[in-house]
Length: 487
Image (cartoon, rainbow, N blue to C red; front, side):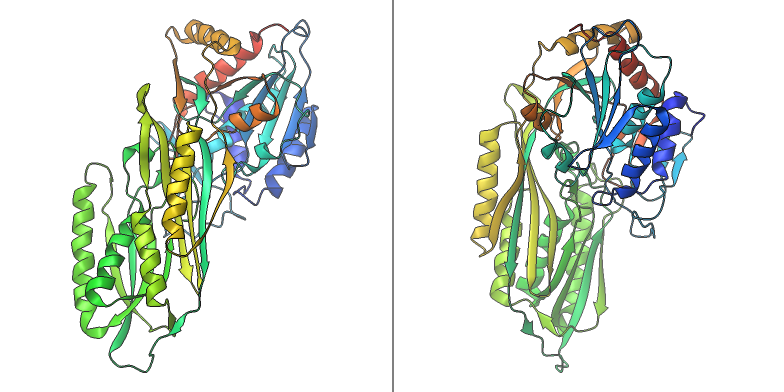
């Protein structure tokens, strides 16, 4: 990989793939970045939130330029195929250069979101041939699990007044606005009831739904991809109604900002109904493959296996209430932006369902570039699960980033883009949640643009980085630093 152009970025990206850095387990990559900065001879420290900050003074003759902050997040989403034994806390990522011009990993997420942004910052910090004003690198922690690093960034710590966020995924776009978000978490503790384990008439079945693409719950939400939890609830509700099934456990999804690809449910039911349950699941497999044949690229599978009869199960009234709430809860696009009708304004993702052992936990992520529509959606979701008797909390909220088309750094970047590539960039907004809005809240008046090379399928094992977009991405960083506005 270090032989790809630009070598200065790819060698650092390769080094990052060798450092385990799933969200919540960043000690190794923090130390790696601290050591790297010190080796480069630039001021480097870890702030109280755990973010890594690097500072490099202006090159001679550039002292009159505004300070630029290059910002990316160091954590990655740990997703893998069910056949993979990869341990994200200990194992390096097995990155592969593919013949079609992309880099992918072996059955896991690649970590180009946002490792490629961190690699670019590292390249700037170690370079000796660039012209730039004062430049800082800000590499935040746990962006993927709640924007922790940005939310806890100390006010007054950063010195620049231009922020270049390196965390968007379509080369050729300059992003000047993003959605805000809110986590909606529903929980319930309940007392399980005993299963008649001595009954010769009962059996248990595990239903597994898999084969979905999943994806980033902001970027891919308008594609209408299947949500394993929303698909599973259709099967389960009918199995309860027609086959006297009783819920024992449900596990679907594992990341708040990833569309769930798989879900597994265990139920008890009369033995005489097992054949009907299998027919039901086969029918739904056919239905799902028909419904999603133009969206999902792999076969959607619904597998039924007979398993050992458990000792306990969920009480029927609690089971029915939770299943109804999951069925009713909105998932997907809620509304498009009226003034930009091809861009999503508001959406929700039914991210995680965990039900077992007397505890039920359901996590949803609502996004919107409109605070009022975000509030409406969150209240709708809260009402849905409250009616099921669950405790509902809204946490981790952050506002949207309102676009400023008159941004001075945007104008400078548009001009540099034209010079470098002989075409106009696309200036746009994105439905993903970026750290920009939070940082701007702590540093009012900051001038912000977000951009990056082309990534596809982030937050899934199909994540891939388009090789030939990294070099122009790097060239635009270099040109922007060299042509930063004067103070």
